[in-house]
Image (cartoon, rainbow, N blue to C red; front, top):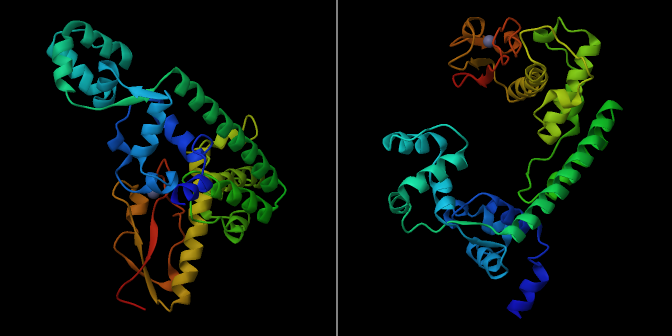
Length: 314
Ligand SMILES: [Zn+2]
């Protein structure tokens, strides 16, 4: 009965979690890499070891040889040190460096990774992984286009619904739902830090901000009209992020007011610009808190100041 239950729960050959897990072995990995918390066990619905054994049985992954073990164990700088110690050339790609080390000192290299159990995809595993990743990429691209269009049409509920159902089916699905009130606010606000931008520029940035917030898109240029130029110390990504920060600030400020706080402080990051630093360690009456992101900020990545409750008030 237990066995049947498990069969009903998933078919590992088509389970997205298993295919995603398999694709991790495009690069050499140990089982330990997936045991840091119980995240993988939760999504696989079985211990990672069990899934790994299935892949081994099916010939989708194999134990790595010396090359794979060294690839897993050492990052580029460490490989360069190993080469330098042996007065060998340190130039080239990672795989070249590994080959050079094996060629000259295979026994020494064996010793460095002795007893390590590393695994990697076989040709068949690689094929399977790549077709899975291609399909996922296609799916994501289609969702991005739909959300982009919805944002352009100011259909905020629709944009959030599409994004939410996409996140729900992800292997590691994010619990945080996208909230259309928040997305709507991105399209309304006019933070002072962006005051020199015209409506055309602001609207383009709002769409970028929506894409960032809903689908974690990082590259602004994917969603900007060609030839878009801000002529500012802020890059488009940073400017779009300022819209998001401002909405969080407004939400946060309203929350503090609603909870009866009379005073607030601003948390300033260590490497912020001089203008932002002026806000540090000051306490403000809740109605006189400077607007964030800070209007005068000259930080290249934009203002990263945060509003926080003053623990002595409220
Ligand atoms: Zn600043």
